[in-house]
Length: 228
Image 1 (cartoon, rainbow, N blue to C red):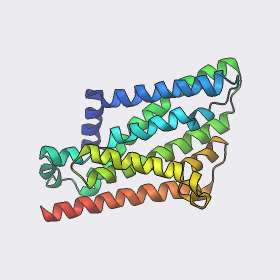
Image 2 (cartoon, rainbow, N blue to C red):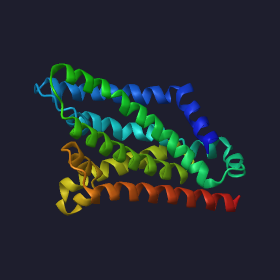
Image 3 (cartoon, rainbow, N blue to C red):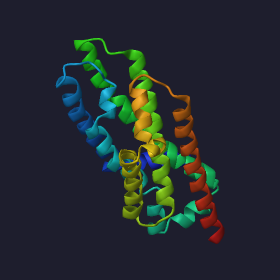
């Protein structure tokens, strides 16, 4: 599995993909920092993660990491080599997932420089900031796992990206039209973490959904292997 992780990380950081992901996210984060912190004169680091620029840009950045996971392998004809390798499908899927998650974790670590800036001007709430970082990691993990599932069902990277973006936006805006659907809004779940609340039900939902998507991706790839 480490070989897959290393291969994926090499792709992310030997091509512009990883740097674009980190750079664009930090640009959006900077805009959020200006409007939610400097604009209001507060030191609430956690609110930056829930602001519209951060969430909106993330909707398009996550597919950047995941859309090629399996689609590109299929399109380039390297899927056969992948499926017939000594590694199990489970290890291949987990390797790709972990590599994408590592990029997201590196990005999240980079946001700590904003926390350091806030510490210079005031005293941010450290427990709330830590809970927010946990919630944001769970939030990103959920969309990475779904993005990989989308990539596994099509050989077209653009279609995989569109599916991921559509899912992200639908779960974001649907509760605005029907309050009964708030339970499917991962963004609303994230909001609780930005208030320093670790909701067990939401945490279980994040983790369960991620595991479900990973398992479905494994099933899809197993079926493709059996067809091969």
